[in-house]
Image (cartoon, rainbow, N blue to C red; front, top):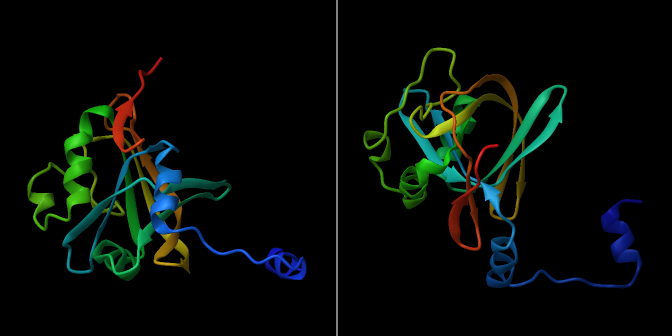
Length: 176
């Protein structure tokens, strides 16, 4: 019996909460802020701000990111089979907002690099750590796709406190 079966078998029915109610709930759960990036097969950079990032396993090193269906960044990631997760430091709020805005020329407005071993653009002025990943699996759920990535390289281009987002505002804490 699966979890779904046990809920159905119990005679209870559950309906999903309204999107506004769910957003209100999740706004109370602070998360780190990242920019997920990739290069399409033509070498064009794509990226977006993402706080839906989670470590999954240590062996093999795997993390997941959740991206909206229809996102051009997601489409480019799926075609290239790779992506980079740029973990932003506290001084990168402007880049987080820029990559959340959908501005088409956002990569012209930040400094980034993409060496041949990189899985996507590295935002070297904005990230305190970067993980390069190969897509190992995807799962569609609702209006998002969960992308699992095996981490094959980690870089630490800068020191700094991580940028956080919660209660609909950016914050950080000091590194001890």
